[in-house]
Length: 294
Image (cartoon, rainbow, N blue to C red; front, side, top):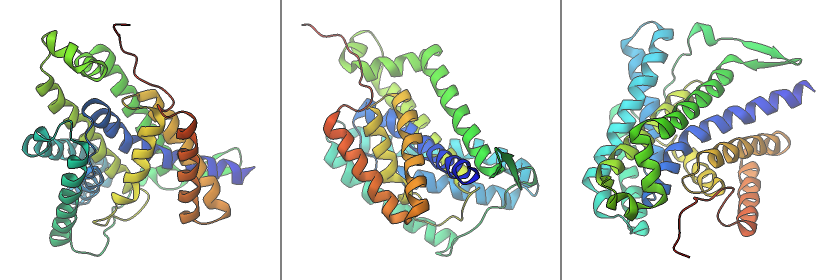
């Protein structure tokens, strides 16, 4: 029983990282149809942000909280710069955005190697996250519980913002029907910029969370990019609740398969399961409801 509980929390913490990474993609991919292959490098930027902040702030407890805020801003700023300089000219050309952002991702990886070096760096978790908590006989690391709570807080905050804030309502309007939103006076240009800032900022937060469970390298974001895209597609484009369900399901599935086989086989099984699911339900778990003239 304790093994099952331990693997369940491992899978849920993995799902939490995937969810944080996928939330941004769910917004940008669902709203603008942009295939951002540099999203993994925004996660990497969050990881290195946590490393830099810890070098400046001696108190590890304070540095983690500061890193979460700074990581969001750094990731968001990178997303806005990418959108303003390149992607704004490539809307409705998904294959072009894939190629361009893939090249940008390679440049950012090399830039990280030049600045921080090729060897992986480590971020020390604060003392209040050391050790574990016993749950039904299984000892669950506090770091994984913190990641789970962080993901829940981000989902709740994003859901509240999309529902209650004017900017959030504009984002939902553009996702559902861009042309109708523009005819209603909503600036899709400003909305796209805000969406990219929030989505990329969440990737930065995911990077900070990643430093609690592993080391940081220039290619760390690529390990989660494909899984994040799978979460977005399986959950439904632009669907927050679908991304939540798909992320945790994928994380638990990978954890369960990895326990009895290998990490590589777990990714293969997860990929096959999602491909099979999409054959039965191509639109994902949920789809955007829009008015039609039928």
